[in-house]
Image (cartoon, rainbow, N blue to C red; front, side):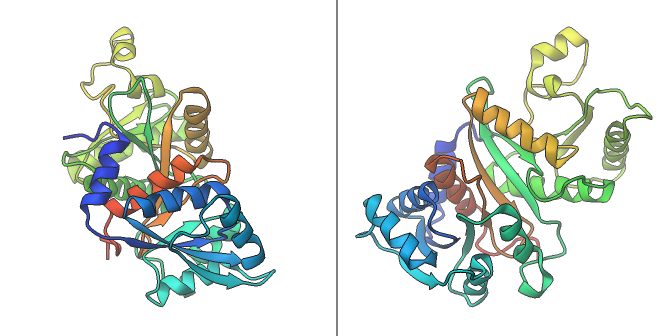
Length: 306
């Protein structure tokens, strides 16, 4: 059965029966700390804080978290905080990597660096899970941070990553949409051609254990009524579990618009690495950080793709 809200994700995280050691790269981030300690209070996270002691301790004190249970791994000014956090995970001292106050580029480059031994044969993909009042269930979208302009081969891998990730979230075969500007293939819109080719390939030999539709426009993905009015005959309209964005810009803009204008709750996880990675925007609320850790705890502690 499809997961309809984040409360079900939190229930699944608790039911997993483990407390993940969450290594936060750059722990002097207010809402990251609040979300991580909320997850700790719920029993599925233990915060391992990597950062400058002179920045982290005053923030913990100000937030009333200084007496809570955590581990602080001190860093010095100029240290590569993400590298320090990755080293802890590789040493078996952490289960989940989490972005804190670090810049996106500073966080991603060590994660993508092969020498850090977090890469697998899968593409690293950032998947956001989203709940909106107007949509009947949670919907995923990716990639929204890592791959700027995915090639046909990379889109194939994003489909696989999203399918495998959603299968841990819900019991059903996920319905995925290949987002495009229009639903008819057009030679001057390469995204529509690639979407058509991926669907044809999927029909011949399944790319992943999912239902795949595309090219398909945004309104048709989310609304059965839009499909009726346009005469677009597909029973999955308004019932999709995931959207594969044609570019990072499209995916990222959609998520931010949902957050700011559609009263959406969101969370983000990077998959395809050897361990789950929680990633949020530094402007996101504590709720986003908390839900991202719940999402991570639903996934296996070690990458299932190996």
